[in-house]
Image (tube, rainbow, N blue to C red; front, side, top):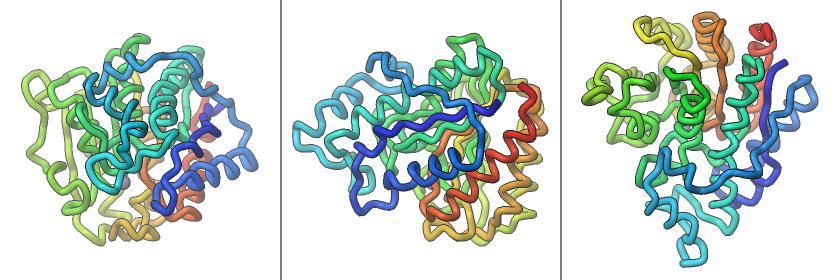
Length: 304
Ligand SMILES: [Zn+2]
């Protein structure tokens, strides 16, 4: 059975008029519950903020925790909002990824984590780009604690996951593979020559693409998934803002292209546990349709 996680408390990360709103996750949840028979992976109620130090600097975590009461309303710039409930919601999202690893340990093979705020722009010392804590990076560390030593992170969000790259740049146990639109946010990272440093050299792969990329061109990029890194688990930063219908990008990627790309990932790593963790996707009808395609492909490839 396909695993699925949603936290109703996510609405307390209140971003008001922002494009990254709670309605995104609510709409996905309504579609998922109406159309699929999913194993509901529980949100993690226990767990402490120290766990975030697997990924983030303590001073940053403390700053976010006390931020709202100290009058902070945004992180770095107006794009990352800090409401009264934001710290708790972001912490629960990051810490709850551990329960999805538990689901895999108990035999599950496919899981979709409908979490917000997203995470892949959150670096060691700061959040940004709608992201507060790096959910997928936390999940990678929980995976390693549970014995999945080598972790492949695939990031298909239209934006480069500068945060995830930052966290694992000197690490040869986590391979970061990203496709994203060149000259889009966050602008300062994501080029082909960022390949990792020290022990991590060769374990970071960026494939930036041009504006107006087509389905065929996009799907072909996934021929470059690493052949010389044998992961124990595959975690996917699922950013559905790569679709043609999104105002935030300029691709020509359709549902067909999305489906072919996901199929490639599922076929290549068929035998492994695979989790998709929600990142971007702001055109809500397009987002819901894209997640529906994902869950259909999960059901078809799930032999657990
Ligand atoms: Zn994005």
